[in-house]
Image (tube, rainbow, N blue to C red; front, side, top):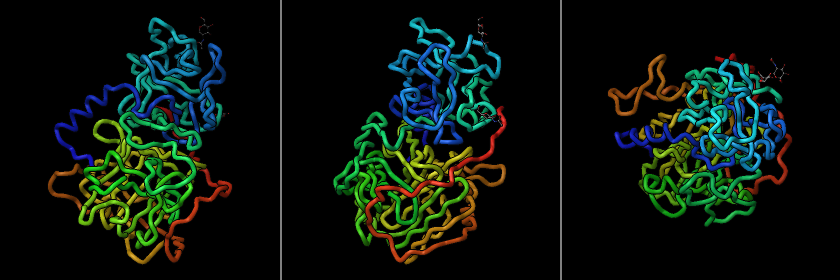
Length: 409
Ligand SMILES: *[C@@H]1O[C@H](CO)[C@@H](O)[C@H](O)[C@H]1NC(C)=O
Ligand SMILES: *[C@@H]1O[C@H](CO)[C@@H](O)[C@H](O)[C@H]1NC(C)=O
């Protein structure tokens, strides 16, 4: 639960000047619009082009934030603005890291996930918003809300580090078994019968344990705990153009939420910049094979839950995490009925807290009503959701998330 106060705002200010991502290097750098693509050096030679390519986890995609630069190949090469030209559209390259602070190699990671060329007002920019492999990356004047300038830090699902954030109590390298004492903090959200919830490692309120929650999943075989049969009393999964969401009811005292706990909100942006839980990572197959969701929000109490994971240019808005006292029904209006287990397609709900051109902030009177739940269709019901093994081989993935290009700046 992230409650706004002067203290947390002060922490945010510190965070904004942190200048490195919360996720521990080396990291993949994925354009905000497509978590399946990665910032990639064409080779390890001086002058090699920097493009986006499908993420493979190769050493040419493993970037380390260090000493004010963004490095790869054993920290020998640096992201570099060709000839230091300040012209919008100048392409990026890699070059041997300078030992005396070459200004062409100085970048910092902003609070809104941009890679800013230090002291130049320029940002690393996905040229023309073009998501094709081989698109060369440029610098461009930093623009608020320019989706081409968002670079998420992340990891390949098949090569997760043991810890992804400092202070993490559990692990992300979870293996392929399952155990009810697992400390796995890697969650999946794939469908009505294949999802995880964040819940305490041992009995404790969500408020008290938010930094330590572990993944409890309907499928065994991903190194997590398994939600005991009989816990889930109703589950509603929906896939929309911009997110997947699972909502429902149950007896979550079976997964360590104390009876009577009104619960709280979990998301990747806690007051100190780390997630709640610290190091909690979320992956899924709905918009690409094993894609990391960089924006997600989830609530759980002793009797209800909701979990939304977002993609695309409006991911942060659709997975807004600042309404932590408003609960599931207000943040994620949807079906929560007991006795129904269903999977639907749906439209996006209106973004939480946004009413036309105005944005409401928690605590301001009056509190506006929740948005209506968006339309859904093609619902398919199943009798119940019980624990099952994760498939060893997933079906070939077909519907990649591939929106059209968006203009730069
Ligand atoms: C960078 O400078 C070199 C040497 O002046 C020049 O040959 C090259 O064309 C320049 N590159 C770009 C992309 O402007
Ligand atoms: C997108 O980038 C690719 C790779 O550089 C290029 O071949 C293609 O022409 C570009 N598409 C557009 C619309 O610019």
